Length: 489
Image (cartoon, rainbow, N blue to C red; front, side):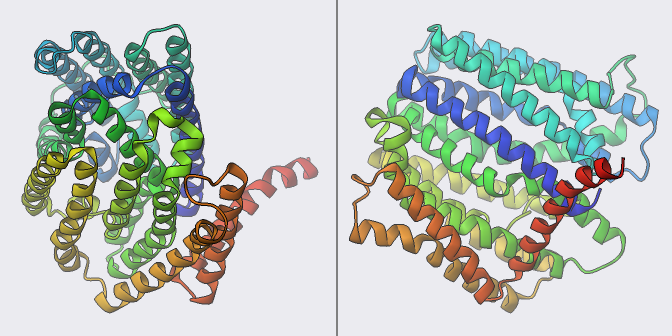
């Protein structure tokens, strides 16, 4: 499958999964769970996700980097995945009682035990998805991701409506893991049986380095909910986690799925001995041209979006969402900051940068919490600026991209972003304030912003414009092929 074809399937799976998860979260938050109940689950999940870095143990990257994959390689990787699933589940289960005591929340014990059980299904999906990704077979990824999202949504809604409170979200996490494992094995069987541990030294060597790296990164990305919950309480973390989740989901909706395509694509460029700089600039152009307007629009529309979707009880999410969404603009300006160093054998230096990165994130968050939930969200903006300065020089030396061309891309993306948010800003100024704007006015301003965004891309001859046109053409062709085949038949 071509890179564009893989991107189409990856995006389709991401969009549909996002839609399912988003609708589920809106219904649950509006009708069934309070911010404090969501906050309780968020803290428990954040603690579990720190241990979850062991679940993959670098297997996806290891499988993608093998020149050839035989039955023995699959058996070894599946066995390692199964072994580490028990390690992860054991760590989370062992942490359940101390976490419940630390936060004075007895219900956290049961939530963490259920989440721990969900990780026992992870090995049944890890290796099949790595094998599918290796061959760019992202149709399989589509089925696995969407199937997991459906199972999670159905269980979450059913149990929340039945009064299971935060436990509904925990059982939904278990359902997601089980569904993904079953579907993955149906599509690309790779059962970890019989167990095969001889010859796993290269896997352990690669996995230990990557797991250390991912573990440090997880401390920075997963601890905010725990820090906010401990310092400010469950209500504050419920609001903060909802804002962070909305921002993250929206970013993933726009661009997250495509990222899974880039690693094998850059591996091909490296193997051909071609320079990575021009390709990296195209990636930067695509991310900034698409993600920047989306996140700026989300920041500007935060108040009406929260009011319309979640109701007044969640109104405290809006200012936090605006600041966290703007932070994403900084964090996507230098994409693939982890993938490319790993691909090019610079994981040792990346580890040092990750330690500095994580230390900055936690220190700034703790400082920001002294001013409440809004201070915690504001600290993300400061962190985003520091993050950009930290990685800019590192990636430049690694990829050797043209700095002037990147600056030109940023400038054009900034103008595109201003064009995209101008209709909504004008609506606030001339028609209705954020507290008064309705669904139809918001939708009209969004559509007008999309038209202005596309027009400005074409006017400025933004590098991403040709790629977007090519992607649209690929989608049209993909839709025509079944019809042509049926006609010929």
